[in-house]
Length: 491
Image 1 (tube, rainbow, N blue to C red):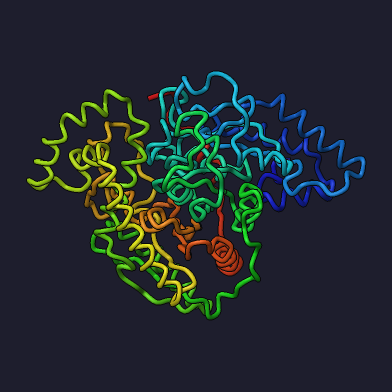
Image 2 (cartoon, rainbow, N blue to C red):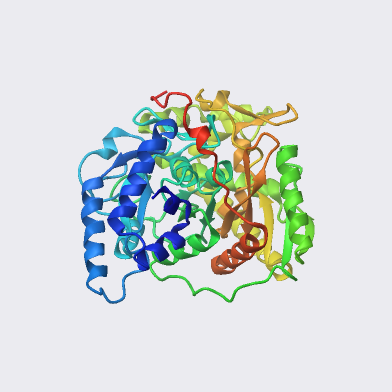
């Protein structure tokens, strides 16, 4: 029974359609797998098996009666990141206060449910989805399935770990600072950050429950173990917003811009080597790979992105914290003038207390850069770039300002350097598909992102499928890595 969980979602759905397994049996297999490996991972943090069994049984009954045309996910068990409301499992976003009460499905979850998904559990996330690591006092720490002493990434870290460990075949994540892409890279799975606005954010926390506004920069997207599954789930959760799948692409003649050289962006030598080696593999398959540098003015990009991001995140801060930052704004301005860096606490304080005019100025820079970036896609079908400067790193739950990241050559970099390589697609609203491209010498997964033109999601996914067919894709971590490890109790 466990063998079927090694299949991707498309393979599991084929087994269901061919009546090789029932929806109830497949759900039971997923629940059993969770029981076997989740103790080491702490990826799944809430469950609702009773409703799930009822749902699976109803789909089995419909299929047994001939059922007509069943929806595309009919009978497939899946989990949902705990930033999305699910009937019976309201989003906590890592905080007990949000777990209370009853709320309807988030819009994307409702689409998945109408498509026949059997939703049975929630996966862990950092508090308010606000970290590159996944831990909180409510549910504890999620570990990386390749090395339990390391983070699975954030904020969709529970989702990525559950996928890699074959607990679930599909997940829905979100991304405002790499939260779909970084965990996918750290755990060796696929994800897709859609063009901004393609998938509804309604029912996602943050912002507060009941919000109707679509947050700037943030997106909702699919996570999976194959490129074809990304297309499958995106076509469900976007509610039919897509333009339809394009014809399959061939790697021969595909125009790829290789972006690994950026003076302002830290990059571990092992990550650089893996991305550039993967680009060489694509060239051997016939792709036209051209190295590029600075697709836009990246100093301006980072400054605008930080301002725009801080303007969003400030809404989630306690009022007293914001008031204190406002009072200390003159001191922060002096610190920045005296040489405090763009990742400093002073820079963050200024971003959190910005005026609307400051936001408008950053938005204008963003618009100018996005217009310039669009010209890249006259020359290239996609850009191939790193996702983060490093592979998965050891758990580090110190205060944010005390954290750094360490490269394999011993160099250190600011923790917020994890925002740099993901900034272009996020700030400019571009689609970016995370694909696994291999592992480091220590055996840790490395991912890369395929960045496409605004609205070019389907083309991006076609490229990802072509790459997977030619060079392979997901590799499962050994089960032996999941048998023992650090306690997943709250930090």
